[in-house]
Length: 141
Image (cartoon, rainbow, N blue to C red):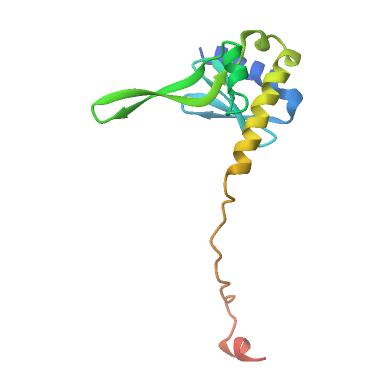
């Protein structure tokens, strides 16, 4: 099973490679894909899911794609949660040229999502005096 999954991951990376440098990372029992360091698609349950948003969702739905869902426990109940990732169309899985339009939609959605997030800033730390620096050196001007 692991060998088949690794082959599927490699195949998906090949399908996405025309868009840029592809890097994969194991996560949550599946794989995440980064295209030029931007998280775009993922593999879950041996299916490739592509990022969608309000502008691209209808294209994926029109092609019969389904959203990636997972179950989340809420107290005594379990509910299905739909994500913004949609399965890739079956014909797009055949070749990089057939995947490109769908992958470009996903990449554009990921870029829009990144543009709306506020920049993360690290707290500014005060510079510490170097070891061995004397108090006199810091008071001289």
